[in-house]
Length: 114
Image (cartoon, rainbow, N blue to C red):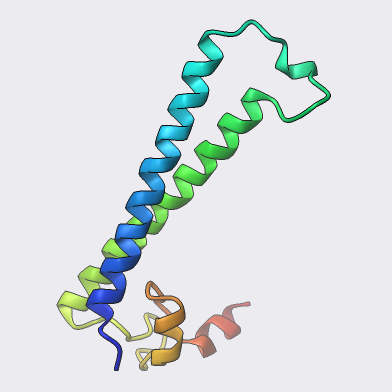
């Protein structure tokens, strides 16, 4: 059996690093846009500053959600509920947890819900 404490911890550190990098990138875009008067809305060479800001903001939101999911998985791990499907109460396969450490449902319940 895999050490899911370590796996979740590693995934959390990766997400924290990614979040810091994304926030830094967003701040850089915001700061850079303060010093330019270019009309990027009509620039045929690339995406707009507004688009880049929205894209990074979306990635930040996704990463923050991932961190919440990892925290919830840690809570389930501590309470002994980790690896138990929230729908059928059966065990979630280790292979699924290795691929998706934040999984809350077994693969069968996920398939049934689609």
